[in-house]
Image (cartoon, rainbow, N blue to C red):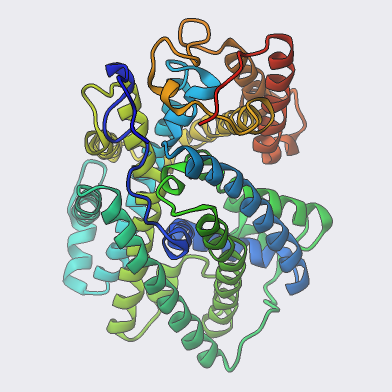
Length: 483
């Protein structure tokens, strides 16, 4: 739709409703292949597979978790397809035209952190490949600056710059990159899995890994309890669902370009429950085969490729997973802050400039590498606040507004979404209370039981959404005209 006389502080061409909606189911499917098929995604999938204890448990825990992810992404995706607006603009309906900057900046902060972390992971795969050569290994060991080896710095900057090339031509370039990268990763995954299974003399769903070794190797996945137990399976499912916390918020950044709801539904079905289950299965089988071949638990694909005698296979594995990690960075950690920063100052910041800001912050963070230290706990606490934000947006859109959004008013400073001076106090209160239980109390105090933090995002969604619903009944909004 065409926006008439928008407020200059709320509008630019990148934040306007999408004019070209040509993303079919295949492009939506590849949003998810780009998001899941990363070095960290592989590690998490392989870890959770092993912690399920059996193939049946894996289907139950990962399968049910993937169905929950599918349902939530459809809810968010339909809102994006109907309105055609990006996440920070959609948030104006529930948080107010100025208040929407709060959820936008929370999402942007988390994205900038993980933008640097994923870039470091992708560059690490290249470093692992190059250090197979003795002369480069010597350079890696003897040359250091900015707190890292010279080789690590060079690879980080190269990978960092490649992402700018992908994004500089806008969202259509992102779509084309995803449509190529997603299938390429699947091909490399299958080659890796089949090759290792042949070496191992066949494939197996039973890992036979000693429990003490298993728990030590998978401790970073955040799952407690004995592998295969009820509480371990609950933790596996919760961890899998929470892994997508950021994308629940900004999936409408992509679904706004979809042809129709059918494209979203079909693309999400193949890209989420089907793709997630198969990806986790392949990652798990590959890890088991690697254990049978090398006698080690190798949960990171670059660790597996480092064992290859063939330089070509090692090159193929390293480059493929580096490209895959670039994919998740573009989808989860570049597009979102690009729109989020543009939403704060639309007069001066467009999509490209917003993306450059996110990339610059990630570059500045690199010498400090906060993702390698205790700052990860801080970002985890901030990230948990995304739960209340999602609960509020979904409750507002589906239960309060009944799916009706006055898109024109999203760009009007004195329109229906001005609330109290541009801020919806109901949403702010609900966010604060939800964040108290999702991140502040479980991460900064011992008031709540130790297991609470694992389910913090769920508590945030539920508590934030419920508080917002009650406050909206006590302090109702004005009637909203249909989109």
